Image (cartoon, rainbow, N blue to C red; front, side):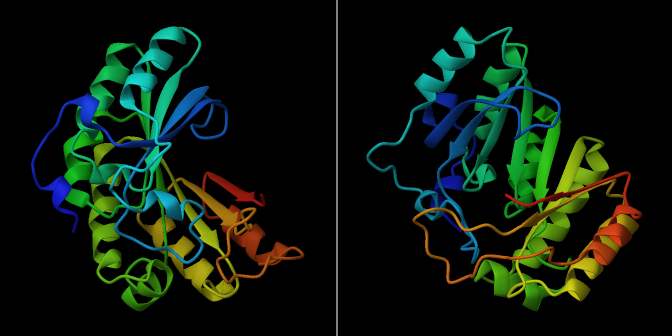
Length: 246
């Protein structure tokens, strides 16, 4: 575990911002938002689209929290929310303070997380209005999580984080990025069944797409995989189910 998250809370100015998307309608359902990508992630997912953000050390070209604050001030009344993504934003000890700044401007706070740090998630969950919770494997199947994450102990961290999000009452979307080499249709169904049984109302199946210029070793997904029959079955399990294909 990265030592930088051991030191306790830090001021918002210390947030390690890798990049910023100043305006989007895609990252927080129903709201216009900016997205702050926080540097650092303990996982090394096979399909990761942002491997350059995995390192905690600042890199040339990184954005700054100061720019984020200027953006928030300029777009107050235009933006509905700021979403903290990554990387894994719960890794950063300045996350809570950064969320407080967003809330002080009257904006909602969104969070994208894989659940790698349940203790830190618990410290910020009461500041969050919506969570996009990545389900990297079949919950409870440590071997499957390890295959996707390429690290150990991720399955246990996810289960604890899921309980934190679910019990908080905050609105959340569970989402799984899937590829035939990583998720069989049976594993997709098993993950969905677990989520439905544990109170998930919204589930998104994100079909892997290859990012330009990034080599993951995964072939593009073609056709209608995992198939209309499975998608229809999943649709009947949740209040809201969506398939995203790029």
